[in-house]
Amino acid sequence: MKHGEHLPATGATPSPNIWHHADTYEVENRAVDRRGLIPAAMPRLVAEHGGTWGHVLDIGCGTGFHLPLWAERARRVTGIEPHPPLVEQARSRLASLDPALAGRIEVRPGTAQDLPVADHSIDVAHARWAYFFGPGCEPGLAELDRVMAPGGVAFVIDNDASSSTFGSWFRRAFPEYDPAAIARFWRRSGWTREPLLVAWETDTREDFEAIVRIEFTPGLADAILAEHPGTTVDYAVDLWWRTF
Ligand SMILES: C[S@@+](CC[C@H](N)C(=O)[O-])C[C@H]1O[C@@H](n2cnc3c(N)ncnc32)[C@H](O)[C@@H]1O
Image (cartoon, rainbow, N blue to C red; front, side, top):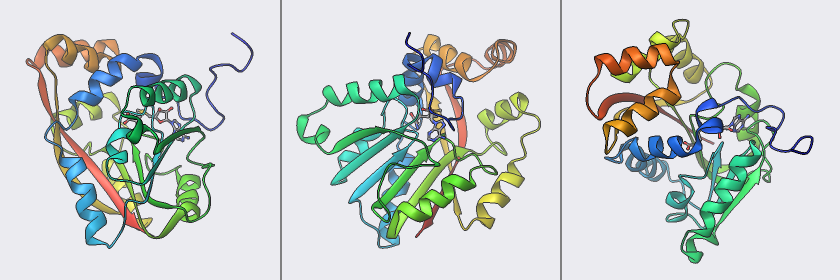
C-alpha cells in the first residue's frame, strides 16, 4: 500500500461497521426500514415546505446504497464520502445501474465539514448515521448553512436510543449516551424531530446475527443474540430535519 492510500480523509469519524465490513453493511442497509417509512417521510416533508428535488446531497454516503433512490427523484445527486475505499465502491455501484439513472449521480471524496459543492446549490441534503451525531457536528452544520439553497431541506437520520428494542441494545453498548441531551442539541440548532419506528428485517437468522455482530462488541452481541430470537427487531430512529 502506498503511503496515504486507503487512509480516511482528515476529519472522518471512524465507522468500523462499514469500513471493515462493507458487505455485511450492505445486508444491514437492505434490512433497515423495509416498509419504507423513511423514504415516505422525506418527500412528504419536502413537499409540505415547498422544497424541490433538484440537487440532492448524500453526506457520508458510504458505498452509495441510497444514491439510486435519490436519482429516481432528483435531477442531480452528489454523494460525499471521506473513506477512499468506499468512494471506489460507491462509484462501482453506479456501473451496475441503468445509465440514465447513473448519469445523474456523482460520488466525490470529502467530509461534512468541508463539502466539495458550491454555495447555495443543494435542494435536499441527507446524512444517515454519518457525522451528524449531535454536539461536535457544528462545523458540518455551518457547511449546511453555506451549501443549502433557499427553501432547501436537510435531513439527518440517527438512532432514537430512548425507545425500542434496538434502542435498549444501543444504551447497553453506550451507557454514557444521553438521548435527551442529543435531542436538546438538535432543537437548539433549529431542527425538528420526526420519530419513526422502523425495523431490521433480514431474510435469514445468519444475516441477522451478522449485522448484530458488526454493530456491537462480541460479548454484547452474544448476549443480545442469546436473548433475542428470530430475524427482526423494532428500531426507533429520529429523522431530524430543517429548512433553509
Ligand atoms: C455508518 S456509515 C453510513 C453510510 C451511509 N450513510 C449508509 O447509510 O449506507 C457512516 C459513513 O459516514 C462516513 N463519514 C465519517 N466521517 C465523516 C465526515 N466527517 N463527513 C462525512 N462522512 C463521514 C463514513 O466513512 C461512513 O461511510
